[in-house]
Image (cartoon, rainbow, N blue to C red; front, side, top):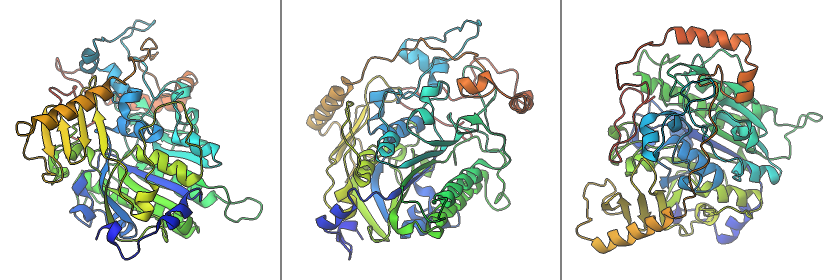
Length: 512
């Protein structure tokens, strides 16, 4: 049943009631989960019982889109701006990988110590983030999980971008049990990457569980210390898991019944259940918007069926992701909404709900979807720009029913699986979409300054200040992990995937 045709349709006046109502907002972001890996989208319901239950309590957005890779989606959500505007279609780690640098006419630089190292790249601290906007509106803001918008300079870390509290890791992926990232391209050895409030944190546990623990703790502690009652200050908790991104090493449970990936998925499902349960248990249920979505498609095409493609491609399987909104009494449970939305739209929607200011200097691609979500109004979005020239992936755009990926044209309404390229039949539409995406590409700024280098090339821990005072326990943990890592690699091979060729990439293993 479509949301717009459900038994309970909220009128425009009822939608207006949520504007400026200042709900708590919890955004849960999975990592690399495929479209069909959740039970409600055709997966094994044994893997995702809590997520499926959550879906039945809210509205499923069936045409919700992300960007094709982790960092791009995160930056787009945080800023309400397409990734190309902030050069976030390039990830920070790409600037330590020769195959990626070559596409920009760059090479690996050498720092003052004579080490080959990476160029510093991150989400610019001058960007306005949704955390800054909500903080200005009086919200408590917390980042709990994977950041992936800069891992070195203080101004690029979460607490330099509007978050009062930080917990988790900064970079693209982390070993779930020893909290080291497996390599610091171009260096091929591990770096420690687990922090609370931007200080190294020594813990024991599985990161999926730890991220849930921290979120539950913050929800439980959000009360007035003098009275013990719930605080009137609303909170915004951004909870981006690293699950089920690689490396998938030791999974603490379920491996007796499921392969690693699905044991990890079931652990993620446990975590989602605990967070949603905490919202309800501590009395926040009716005044909290909880959202569950994913950053991009799964690693392999079969994970995203019936859609074509996978992570790091702009086919539907790479960019169409599950998304559920739950807000009791404001959203009809068990419904669906076919409105086209992009992750950038959360930015303006959150600010509207919070009663915050939309005024800012930077161009915003975000569209306020309050009426669409809460009143069943037609979606104001008709266009999504996934990629422009200058990326490692082909330029891609959706306009109405049609989608252009490179030179291929598809009618997404008639052919959502993108099985038939109709470019030759509709050259006029190809020309119109190509012209539009080229026009958008002219709005890309010049390549940011790439003169700042990571030094040392292989730190003990991420965070420049943290590494300068790295405690002995960090060094000991890292030494033990590095001692187990390969010392030699065959010529031309690396521990990371090479850049896409002709706009395409093939992942092996767990995609680390």
